[in-house]
Length: 408
Ligand SMILES: Cc1cc2nc3c(=O)[nH]c(=O)nc-3n(C[C@H](O)[C@H](O)[C@H](O)COP(=O)(O)OP(=O)(O)OC[C@H]3O[C@@H](n4cnc5c(N)ncnc54)[C@H](O)[C@@H]3O)c2cc1C
Image (cartoon, rainbow, N blue to C red; front, side):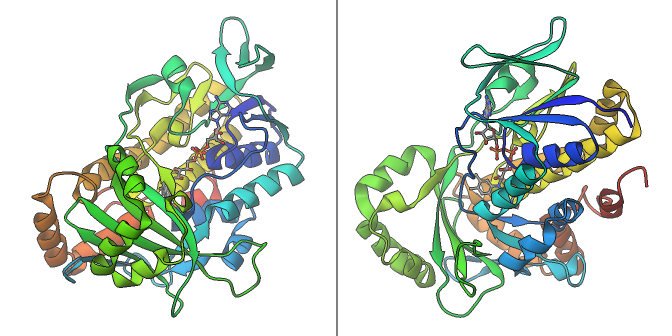
């Protein structure tokens, strides 16, 4: 086994998962994070069967299962009560589920493992530049030089500044709509559903069960509460205040309105914006972009963290197969291409149906999805899409290869 010296920029899902795989494979790994204390962003997420396989390989699935919620179904209604989306994981595979997790839980599991494994982390190190002239080195915002390295992984997220400097970017526009998120204790009976209510493509509210954090008492059940909003309307929403929004919600979705009751002000909601990132190739010499930095999408399909986890495992497998870094990167690109391309395409196509100003898309979506979604073929394809294993109609991502490693 040949040991490489590998720098990883970004202590998010992609960076920490890659660090764990590569360190455990015997490489010398150093993580660089701009924040003094690495921290999670956002409220909750769904770990799909793809991401679950990667967490299992990392030995973290059991703990994730202990604190998360098995989400078996996604149910989306129009405001008038018509079922628009009703997708059950069982139509992908009986017994399968998405794992609703607190973001802090996923982050904590990865970060604790990184610390336990003794992986070097340079915090408060914002990487400003990658030098490729003679040796591969990183330069941070204070002008400090790090390296040399055999390989640099850039996992600095959708807003990556290094992507524009060093990557073959085709485009990375920001979506006009974003989301507001908060976390609340679950009300009423425990739910195993991701529920959404739509009003055309302009309004969308959602409730995702995400379980608890280890610091919460056993039995705590929390829910990520989200509301879609155009980025340039957030200030007006804040200015109008919670009382005005509560009145709107009482009529829109009373169950959801109950989650807003008791909140003091709009500051309880965090804001999320997203980009549609497309690179011609994620490789630039011995620099590889992974996770959102390489292929950020809208969260409509709930795949971003899962794609990042699969990136990390696939890279580790490629480096285990060949000692030549360039050959390993070529293998990685080849193995990730179809899966990433498909989910980027599907997210881009589906997002305007749920988040855009094109009002006419609303009735069309409600009719088409509500009607065709009941056919067994459409039902199965939708379940595979949600589970993260679709490569297009009737084509599936090979979960067993991901589980066993590509060379097994
Ligand atoms: C509202 C919302 C809901 C979502 N829901 C889901 C879901 O249900 N399921 C799912 O799979 N995904 C979901 N996602 C997507 C998921 O959050 C992302 O895909 C995932 O976090 C990407 O991980 P990453 O490691 O690539 O980037 P990030 O998690 O963004 O991590 C990047 C890290 O790099 C650091 N960094 C940045 N620049 C530098 C620099 N120059 N130097 C050093 N460090 C730097 C940052 O501080 C950060 O720690 C959602 C996203 C949003 C916004």
